[in-house]
Image: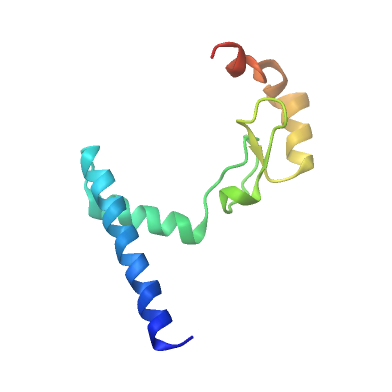
Length: 100
């Protein structure tokens, strides 16, 4: 990557950090602590799988969404099936849509 492209990418990163800091300050959060946590989560990933027994960590975009309620996320088909049959998602799926 050339020098100008590198500078533009760094500039976008600084602008994004400033926007996130402003947003956090509006909510009364200590922006430096929250920003560090936000960056760590973005790099490492977090646990998004709705199945309680699952420990898979990753990026949110990599987890499949329940096609019915669109709120539960799963790391794969096995976790989705397990949560549907024994985890209780079958009982709560769709109730969020009925209350809105």
